[in-house]
Image (tube, rainbow over all chains, first blue to last red; front, side, top):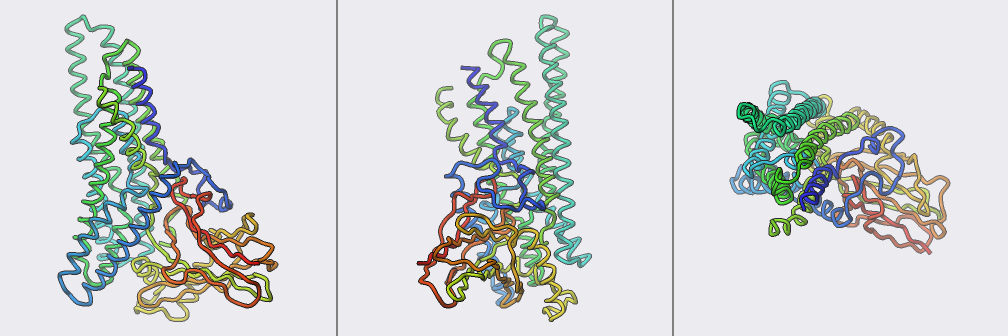
Length: 322
Length: 198
């Protein structure tokens, strides 16, 4: 049973990367634009329909948001402003269901390590609001203060995006080192447990590791969130152009709340999945401990890989028509 | 544990669903498309494609094109914008996926690229060239407009999204889902515009 659970756990960690962008399949690379049906890792067909539907809903909500923004500009009334905020919330929820927002990183993070449910909520909130604040800062500095063109702003945003992926990779490396240390520690512990002093030392090291993990959650949330939400930037620029920038700021924050709910749901789902699979993480035979450490290590390496792939994809895409 | 284990499949599906596709390229712009198959002397040599961008994306395009920032696009600015778009779109085959009897045509050749702005919307149009013109009764002509990176999300225009213009042939059109060409890691199903002639 334990072996089965661990196998499932490995599958969840690997599955969290199911939608990883394959850089080799990037259609934006010159010479890669040919028609190649079903390229890259394909999602199950029922998911295809679902993602298309979500994109359709996004499109409808987005169109309504723009209409309400123009209505506020034209009438100065409160009702369209309130409607806009409600739409922004819905847009945040659906926007984050679509690809992006570092969800694979979140899934890999929580699939590879035990965590409290609160951590899932904290991670979702942290990423969403950091992304919103990042977008607001980008627009305030580049558009309001420096009066740059939209195209230049999107290009600058790309730089921040690349930096975000670099940070994700760095944290992945740190997590991998941490995982390795944990593996070595547990092995030492098994060898020297009868010695009280040795056990005490091991406990001290565990405490330090746990503290490091809390910091890791924050740093991962901030790293994944530094990438400004492109949708927020565009909405902010649109409100700026329509002379209702303050309303845009409110909309960006409400949108972040929607994004937070979606990412937190993913985090919690991953944590629960992991828990139900690995309910007795270290209770099995002697071989279980190293295997469990290996899962943590695999998750960390996966995060490094995901960061690299996202960076490569963003690099090749560039600030398209932006 | 057994109770927990029962939840596993459902949660796995949920996790996979939500985690699918981490790239930061979810749609940032939306465009509605209209496709017109243009017949001449019973043969098809041109497919006219028109995009209408959403208001937010249009505002960005307008800002980029309005070089002197006087709030409108003069002729020089329009010509400059068209050249800019031409270069960009050529590289991506105009996001237009043309097949003749199921065989993809690449590179896609297009002419008469034009950009206009009306009522806060950016309108882009171009003519895809089929060279030499094909006999539509003997050739299955199909075209899809989609961005495989999912940065732009295209949809058929709400009213009259497809038409046949010109003389010759008894032709019908249809718009269908094309799941065989699902893109963006197989997650998005594009629409395909078919020309069916007798």
